[in-house]
Length: 183
Image (cartoon, rainbow, N blue to C red):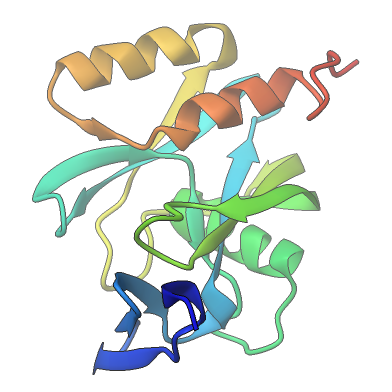
């Protein structure tokens, strides 16, 4: 039996994460939600891209991200699309008339089994202030789409940690996955 086929051994399990050893590999898994999260690509009717800023304990730093959250963490069996719209509303105060899963892939395949779904939210309407739930302190940023990449670079220079998936999300605003322009 090679090391990839070894039986997994859980060495720690918390409320949201477990640490697994399989052969010579150590990695984390989500305890709930099937290990799937959604990152929401959302552009307001005013052509502003929605970003969220929050303090992330593992980094001990403020981050800039697109709205995101675990799929099915509140309601088991909830679809990716429903979870994405719920998270968008909770974090930003915007809801979407439609959500489309663009792709699903690993977030950090050498360290975690978690996968993320890129979800395009369209038909946005403001329904509240956003800011997250009682355990979160989220600041919402609405940045004009043509200026979004430059704004992200400015935030990085100012010391914020930026999720590398931000640039993939910006690309997906204007392109289909095969690289053709969205029309």
